[in-house]
Length: 206
Image 1 (tube, rainbow, N blue to C red):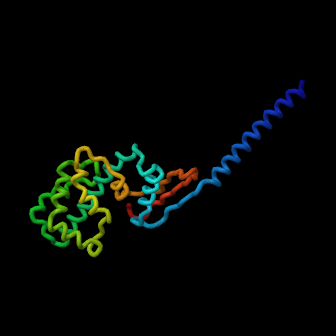
Image 2: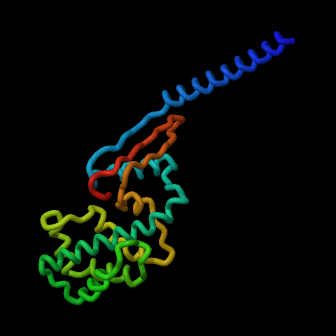
């Protein structure tokens, strides 16, 4: 009887051992098939843009539906912060904003967070962007101050973005700059190949 118990125990241990070996083999195969891409570089070097583009490609030209609405406030934040940069630069360079000054004063009071966006904010951005003063200031970017390279894209799209039914497009999401803090990673699958992309935040916000 003792021999029988010992035999059953040995069979169970052998079975468990085979299961563990099979699991380890699967893990080794998975690691072998997985490609890792590490995105490195200073802020504004385009790492986050590549990260977003890979998401679009992996979703067949679309962006995960559950994430689209999250980008709405980020787009608003981009617009407000960049228009504030232009208004501050105009003041520093003593460029007259003329009739757009009232809109500039209101923009100066708007908190940069996208949650505080209002119809008036979008209308003020439109007025400022079309003003001679802000256009003159914009031409001095890079030489006198720094502005996101996507700023004029959003300013030119302000009527669409200020609509009540606005939802960020793929182009909006790709061009939107967002603060990259720490490390962000995502796994994509292309033709059966698993690719893990790791985005390491730069020194400046993106």
